[in-house]
Image 1 (cartoon, rainbow, N blue to C red):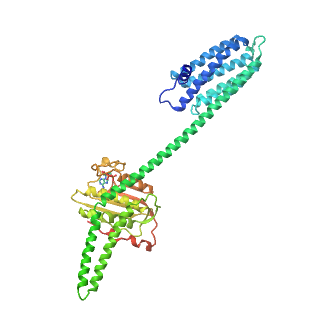
Image 2: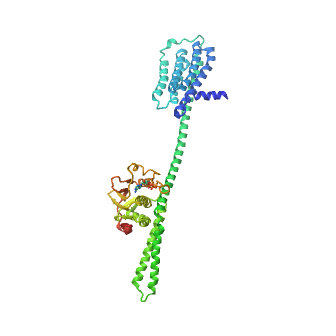
Image 3: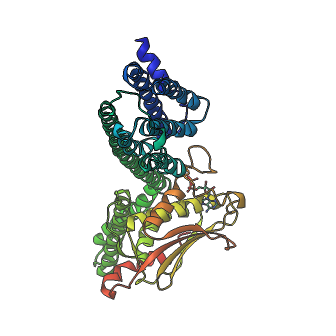
Length: 465
Ligand code: ADP
């Protein structure tokens, strides 16, 4: 138990809290390899005593101690130095064997294996250290193979290098296989981590999208709630008008002779009032619908504006705010989801309403113009405007200057998101003298006249104040 704990503590030497995980992994690996090297060297010493030259035993012991010191070097902060020294010491030991035990010891095989180790101990980003590690092994191989220090090779009498060949081959295979195993495992770990990561990111994205949709829907409902607070009026007034005309009809049919023209006129009035109620109810129903997945298609700007005004005009009238819509060409088309554009306009109108509500001069204007590519819809009001220091913040989600319970701070941010999803923009026109918000949308080619006749709703061309 304590052995396992000690080994674990040794492997963790040099790992700092908050250290990059990839570096921590490599330091741990280098500590593990140092420990393995020390064990191999201390373990070889008894065999070398029996057969090898004396210096080999000394090299085993000194090498073992050196390998044990490398993790300590990491611990005091030299993580790169420790790994480089580990590689240098390994290669020097092998070179010593190659030179002193002779070519037949097979030590050169170990160089080939050692050339792979730097790839496990260093990241490709640690280029200099990686190159140095490989150079040690290639250089060691070249020096050993050149027989430059051949004269130092003095084996003791009776020494057989064949045993060392087997030992070298086993070491070379063990080092190469272990290094490749670690690399392959690190690869698998990284891939697995990435696949988690991707799943988590996907989940987070889905969650974000869900929250965005919920926020957009809440903002829409808040705007609808605010603006259609007077919808009862909107429907009650025409209902009262219908009732009055029904009484009038009853009076007319009792008269003799029947005034057919008057009957015709009163019935026509009733019909048009019923149509008005139907338009209001349809407008509310359409607006409340989730339009997130509607296709983008050419829509009449005049019609969208008219339908939006239909929902909120009574509120302005009720508070004696002069709401005017400048005439919009009936064939002006924008590529959009009409319900979402209605939502933006309702938000802008609602903000304009709040801005002018307590002013002495109270008007709101809506106008639209276009160039070849874009349609611009402007909502202008006579309010005090946006404070210059808040201009950059008003589009942030949850930013509001309104009282708790009145503002959600979502209107402009959600509207901006919708406008951008249409390939358009929503911005405060800072150059305008009055407070002016501008919605830009991609323009669609004008539709054939027949398709746009109902777009020219005359209501949009008159003020409601
Ligand atoms: P909310 O209306 O719930 O506050 P918005 O995102 O629609 O959220 O608006 C954010 C803020 O932008 C408002 O609280 C207000 O301070 C400012 N603002 C928006 N429109 C106008 C306007 N027409 N005039 C003055 N300030 C405005």
